[in-house]
Amino acid sequence: MKFARVHGTVVATRKYEGLEGVKFLVVQPLDEGLKPIGHSQIAADATAQAGPGELVFVVGSREAAQAMPVIFVPVDLAITGIVDEVDVDHGLRRTQPTAIWHLPPEDED
Amino acid sequence: MYIGKVIGTVVSTIKISHLDGRKLLLVDQLDLLGNETGAYDIAVDVVQAGPGDTVLVIDEGNGARQILQLDPGAIRAVIVGVVDEVALST
Image (tube, rainbow over the protein chains, first blue to last red):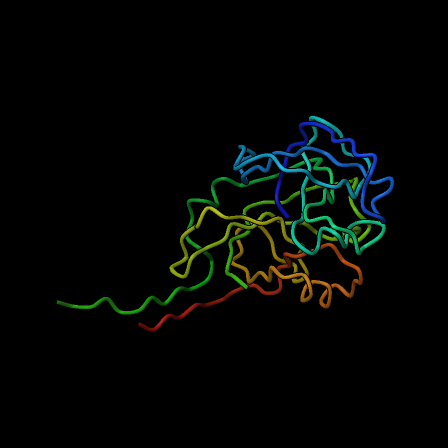
């Protein structure tokens, strides 16, 4: 799952069967620093409670449809939760991984 | 699967039922040398990992559903191991 910001709503009256009552929202994908990356996309709202301005997380590909009330629906991006809090330790970014890393010996010329 | 580094936690109250009671961690994807690639995931943790840990992440829906015993299950990324050691030959 990735972060996204809800930017708007999409209304479609005529939809494929199984999508009745599903709300579609315009979302901007975000990187882990919550900065926009790439183009806006349309996501189905599996929480049914997200709205413009909110920070959410989304799941893509086949798993998106699995979040919906009817799972065999043509959906490839779904909002699966509304974010309350992100707690990041930026100091960890600069640290070496905790695992022991044995790198291949460098070639000696 | 890929190796990642847990750098934080994500808290959510309003979420789909598949995520009820699950711990969500923010994971930076690492390359084979242990450097960050810039990619990340919000992953479900099933091995009691925590910030700072080097972890093994599966990013595939069928495996995730099997581990979490969900059907349907709208989850892809699951932390399935804490990595102790990586050894690369040439």
